[in-house]
Each structure stands twice: as structure tokens, then as C-alpha cells.
Length: 281
Ligand code: A3P
Image (tube, rainbow, N blue to C red):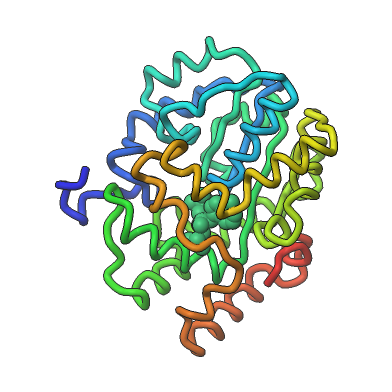
């Protein structure tokens, strides 16, 4: 993948950009038939909103509440990365299965909604999300380098980035915000009070924890604890996924004009929504 030319690393499908290496057309075609189960744990996040953080938290919650101590699997639990043969093997996987995705709800397997598994959705202030995404593009060998910060910022604003528009994702979840199978958590709230987040998430998935388990999981899931463990959890890819882990880094990247531009887009898309009321914007 590293040798692939930058212009070949993404391709467009139904108007949205995807990774050529990780999500080729045959993988996305096959994904339509993936059979979710009612007892699956589904994790959804637009890229860079805290997916890997929540994967780590969820695995710890599952292990603590089931008494298992499973090694993290080799690959990230993103269904859009699973080759067709691996998608088939998933049928044999015992519960509880953790299935993750960065896909827009319209492009998820239909059974994610018809079978009514519980879905945890993570959002993050779009200003910090685009900054995180910009650095990720430049570090991840399967994605093209951003030409410049200004170019990546304008691509993000128009949704011309891998997995599509942040704002389209936000609007799609706004429609499902009151669905009893859906829980939305915010990156900034988790930073503010991780034990409370861990508790809420475990209760949502009906995987209750003792107070000691909650505080132990939260302690092992801080940014610094996860960085320390990243060689084990992510191998050499650790530095790609754990960059700064802070709220407000956008202030070090945005020009005043860019900040105003994003404020305007944010308000035109999301003003008055329930999601915006929860968002730390
Ligand atoms: P930054 O680039 O701002 O540091 P994803 O996993 O969805 O790709 O998101 C990656 C972002 O989540 C990165 O943001 C990363 O540092 C941050 N992150 C990862 N683990 C974290 C943790 N335990 N606490 C806070 N932020 C974390």
C-alpha cells in the first residue's frame, strides 16, 4: 500500500470516497449481506471522533463483565475492512460480537437496524475532528497525504474526504437520536468524566460493572494509559492513532476565517437540533 500512488489510494463509490486497499468494491458489495444479531455490540464513529478509544473501553467492559480476558484481535473491528471470506467467518463468531464502522447509516448492513442490536455512536466537535483527520492522512500509509491544511480543511467542509461528510453523518444520527437502541456519546464529555462514560456505556449494553471495575477501566483508558499500551494494542501503528488526545487543538490550526466558515456551516446544518444541544461546540 505504501508504494501505491497517492491518487490511487481512494476511490469513489456512490459519491463517497473509500480506501482502495481496505475497503475495495468487493468488500463493500458483500457487506450489504452481513447478518447482524440482536446481541451484537455495534460501535459507530465518523473517522477521528474516538473510535479506537471506545473499542478499548468496550473490550474492557466485555472482558470485565463476562470474566473473559481476550487478546485484542489482529484487525480493527471495522466491518468495511473485512474481506468477503472473513465476513462469512463472522457468522461462526460467538456472542458478544463487537462490530464497528465509520460508515454512514445509509451504507451500513441493513440488519444493523432491522435486528435492533444496540448501537453506540461517538461524536466529537468537528473542529477537532478535522484537525485529527488532517494529521491522520499524513501518517497513515494507506491514505493519501493531505496537500496542505487549507486544502484538507476545504475538502472536509464539502465532504470530499474518506467516509464522506461529517455533517451528513451528524444529520443522519440526529434522526435516530431518540431510538432506544441508539446511544450517542461525545468525545469531550468522555474527556471530562470518563468513569461516568464507562458506567453509562456498560449500562446501555446491559453489561453491568461494579464501581471498582468502572474506575479501573476508566484508569486504563486515559490517553496516557492507552499510549503506554499502544505497542501491544496497535503495534507500530500506535503513533498513528494516538496523537494528542485533547480538546481544543483546533485553535492551533484554524485561521480566523476557517473558524468562521465552519461556524456558519455547522449552524446552517445543525442549529436547533438535539444533537447540537449535546455537542460541545
Ligand atoms: P487526536 O488526533 O486529536 O489526538 P479515532 O480512533 O476515531 O481514529 O480517533 C483518534 C483520536 O482519538 C485521536 O485524536 C486520538 O489521539 C484520540 N484518542 C485515542 N485514544 C484516546 C484516549 N484514551 N483519550 C482521549 N483521546 C484519545
